[in-house]
Structure formats: C-alpha cells, structure tokens
Image 1 (cartoon, rainbow, N blue to C red):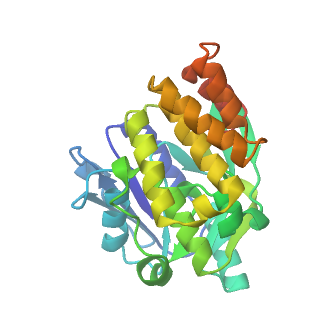
Image 2: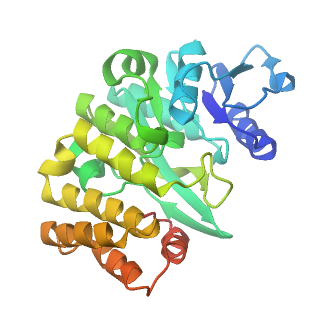
Length: 296
C-alpha cells in the first residue's frame, strides 16, 4: 500500500491507522513516501502481518513520482494507493481483494464518501461508467486513486507506471484510469469504502495554467478525448473554466463557445459565460460543486 505525503502529519496518521487496522487476513506492507519533505523514521514498523516502510521520493517531484517510488519499493502482489488526507473505511481491502479473485480482474475500485465543509456525500461506484468511453465523457469521482487496488504485474507491465511527464502531475490519476480501462475491465465494489477529504491544504497549490496545460497533454495522449463530442466538450469546458479563473476571458469565451457547439448540454460552458460576465467567481462555483460531492 502506497501513501504519498507532504507536511500533513495529523492526516497521515489517520490514513495509516485505517490501513493497518483493515480486517484483511493477509500481511499488509505500507510504503510511506515523503515528497519534498523530511521523512519521519518514527513511523516505521515491523510486525509479522503489518509493516510500515518510510522512504523519500527519489523520482520526479510530485504525486506521480511519489506513487511510482512507493510502488517500485513495495513487495506485495497487490498494490493500493491512499492519499494522505483520505481514509479507508473498514472492510475496504478485504472486499476488493475478494472481488479481484472472484472476477479474475486486475483492477478494482469502490465507492467513496466525499467529506466537504462538514457534509458527507456518498458516491457509489458503477462498473458501466468505468469504460474508456464513459471515463472520457464524464468525471467519474469514484475512479479515485485512493480506491484503486491493482495487481502488481498489471501496474508494472500492462497499465504502466503513473505518468510523470504530465505538467504538475495534473490528472495523473485520470490518465492512469483511462489506460487501465483500455487494458481490461475495471471491477467495482458498489459500496462507499473510502472517505475522501476535500478542502484540506492541497498537495499542490492551485495553478490554473497547469490545469490548462495538463488537460492539453492528456488530450494529445488519449485521442478519444477529442474524437468523442461529449468528451471533447468536457475537456474544452474544463480548460475554459481554468482560463476564465486565471483572467484570460477572451480565450475562455472562445473555448466556451466551442464547448457549447460540441455539446450544448455541457454545463461548464454556461459557468464560463457567467464568470466572464463577472456574475460568478471560480471559488464560489468550486465550493458549490464540492458541496454536492462533485468537481469542476
């Protein structure tokens, strides 16, 4: 199990406790990877069934490099990831490992509970949404890195490592999930088994230019993101939102019109028009979406 962390010791302690107290009958090895921060060797632990290894990210700085560092340093036949501000709920690991064995699959996810501003919103995983086309067309929040359980062989050889070349590691989990869906079916436990905290100090500071560049990189890498009209509208809508948030209103309006023409049902185009007219601020729109367990 890989936990990438950076200067959030209290949240990290909660995440580790939830992992190590899982009712999974087999051994659990947890690799804590410190990214651009001094490791805490006091977290290391060596028990018969529960082990904690503490290391530093020795690859590209950021989430992608940290996750890859942990995966390569681990020794288990199954790999799982947990962000340091998320918490696995009881039964998560047992349920997913059992589902992988039962279905002969290589990748599993599960539902989540989004915690934002004191409000909890459940998002139940639906396997029909975990195809390349559906992942391209809509934001599937349950396909979250903290829900992933994958065989080591698939991660290293078929799906591949997390892409470290994406600008700012933006959307590295989305890229990985698209690649996983292309290699075979992703199975899902239809229960919320991970609590995802929104609103804590971000692993990286919000950088709207990074969002635009990251999405452009993903579109170049995954042709479906431009070929499918609904997927293209989502992509352009997200880029337009980022452009409006950074004050590039002319470019934002132009891209919002393209979004509208590609799919008039795509709500991001309307949000961008409101922002460009000075009728809504990005912080307000983001907060409103988060309160319903959704993102922009």
